[in-house]
Image (cartoon, rainbow, N blue to C red; front, top):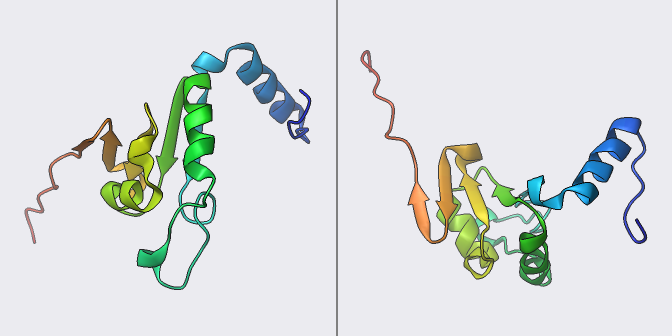
Amino acid sequence: MSGLPVPRTAAGRDGLAAMLREPGRALIALDFDGTLAPIVADPAAARAGPAAVSALRRLAPLAGTLAIITGRPALDAVEYGQFGLVPGLIVLGHYGRERWQAGTLTAPPAASCPRC
């Protein structure tokens, strides 16, 4: 595990060991704002860090699923992060209500409100 962080808890150590043992079963999910992109005063100005796409491209084939979860619309995150360049990446927008994968955006129909 050279170069990897050392988990502080037994559960963390077990989780890392499982990921290393069977990386194809691993789900790696990252947040956009504050993780891949710095927090900025104007949310529309947020962009993924300069090394984010290359790191995600290297990580994607090693994990079973690589995802980004954000409160933003999924297409905004894809554009702001240039995530269309990462094969296999899933972007869950509006905290999972939208799903972008391989250039296709899906979302359930808007809920109707019978008393609205």
